[in-house]
Amino acid sequence: MDFSPDDDHLAIAGAVERVCADFDDTYWAERDRLHEFPWAFYAAMAEGGWLGVAIPEEFGGGGRGITECAIVLNRVAASGAAMNGSSALHLTMFGLNPVVKFGNDRLKETFLPRAATGDLHIAFGVTEPDAGTDTSRISTRAVDDGNGGFVVRGRKIWTSKALESEVCLLLARTDDADPDDPRRRFDGLSLFLVDLDRQYCDIAPISKLGRNAVASCEVAYDELPVEGWRLVGERGRGFQQILHGLNPERILLAAMACGIGEVALRRAVGYARERIVFDRPIGANQAIAHPLARAHMQLHAAGLAWRDAAWRYDQGADCGEQANTAKYLAAEASFFAADQALQTHGGLGYASEYHVERYWREARLQRLAPVSQEMTCNYIAQQVLGLPRSY
Image (cartoon, rainbow, N blue to C red):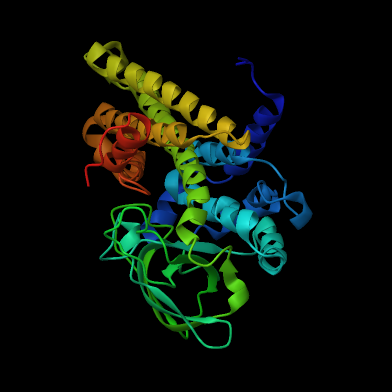
């Protein structure tokens, strides 16, 4: 087992940090306050080729793996961009993984080169108002149109980047299945790469606590026509196909969460060194120092977890346990670090000018999305420990 630094990975991290250096905390605070997508930052990352890092080389990408993607997004988040910066990128960087693995040649040739250059913005449509975590009960339907295509009707929520996106990776029901039969409840779901045609799609942003530079939206699909070649992989196997994107998503979110925790801790440590109360720096007090030390250790451990998961994924090894573990540990470590950063600043931590309240808001999201901590524990309990299903 070799823990020596990888020169290539260090070079990637350094290059991304140099791009991010042009976009300071004030830039990100303004994007969040104005609910404005970070177009200048996105363009700079696209110009550097970072959006195509995991797209296969034959389609103009870098041909690298989830490890390199995670490093890029970790350094973006750690720059102070937090979720507003990393979420602006990650769906383009890795959202088309099911298309890479299962898509037909026309899908790949049409969309992957554009994703590699950053020209294509992609949304992800799975969650529904009445289904929530239980994906087997989604009701959005793709009905045969009689000409080899489909017509989509239904509603999705928490569709990030829908306002900016041209296409959406959409999970819809094409065939009936018995949701009460645990062996077949995911049958009949199919995956499509659809156009977000405003003639048939009503897109409304959801007012939310944080990460406001990247909108989360409710999308209503009203008779959206979808050509047959937009079907990703095999009809009725969409849920199984989308699973190939879930472990990478958890790994990327873990890396992003650790980045948020890192920048929050960095600000807290700086403040604890400089803030003088009772004639000494507040960092000299164990009530301040010890929680920050624990935050550092927890972030380090979570960092090892997401790197382990990413390595396993890139090696083609099973990584469900590792990916879910990394996501859980990183979410907890990130929020603990951000919460302690706010506490270290005292009342000033509540003030926007110190930025830690923004990190706190965005770190809190990690414990909810894209899967809750409770559902992650369910996965480990059932799939790893072999305990009975509880729901």
